[in-house]
Image (cartoon, rainbow, N blue to C red; front, side, top):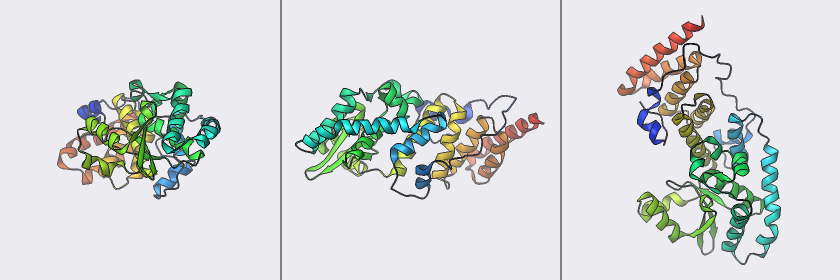
Amino acid sequence: MRPTTHSRKVAASGLLDVPVAGKHPVPSFDAEPSFSADREFAKLLVRQDDVELEIAALELARDACPLVDFSETIGWLDERACELAGPIARAANQHDMLESLAGCLSGSHGLTGSADAFLTADGSFLPQVIRNGHGIPISLSLIYIAVAKRLHIPLHGVAAPGHFLCRLDTNDGPLFVDAFSSGRVLELDECLDWLGRLTGLAHNQLVPALGPARPRQVIQRMLNNLKAIYLENENWKPALPVQQRLTLLEPASYAQRRDLALVTLKAGHPDRALGMLESCAKTAPSDDRITLEKLIDQARSDLAAWN
């Protein structure tokens, strides 16, 4: 049985290869999800599209950093929009507008991609990306999109295979921004050629994936990135709210419910995990069932140690 993650290491070893938290489980005071303060995430649960993605991304960051100050990030985005108002107004065309956007965010303020950003959760969290100047494609793209929105530029996220992008539709066809590569601007053919080299996919396979992504799709991708990082590092406690959110977004998914049970147990909450594991075992495929039964025994053993 393997977790639903894109991480090569985790996918190869599986969640089940890592020992469950030791002989003295911690109390499960934080086992129940509590996202009542997350107004944008709440919109995603009812499939609304009027979501402020930068706020939704900050809500994810708050899981790991409860004291994160949203106003600092929002203020920084507002300042960049003010800084860009003149250059955008003077731009000769939409391509030049995107070049000005990239010139400000990447050129003047140093936001760009970094291989190291894929290794820690900081590469996904907007406050840390702004502070450190480095991020992964999706976090950098959300910063571009948020600043563009303040300038009334309808820039959208694109969940392209292997690399998140931004898209602006123009009368001459779509333009794409690769925020990870210092905001370079690509026309459709250039984008298809580059993604084809990156993924090995043909143009006709890539075109359907280059449309604007819905907010729910964007946040799920961010969550899956965080999940992969946390599981790769066996960092179960911060993985728990990430997996809780993924399960809330896909409540009918056996794989997400199974992963929630596993992460809950490994995070040291056998009381919560036991019922989840027992529920999953009822509908588990045959290759999962034996392992789930062993985990159920482990959860019962850990609970007995509390008494």
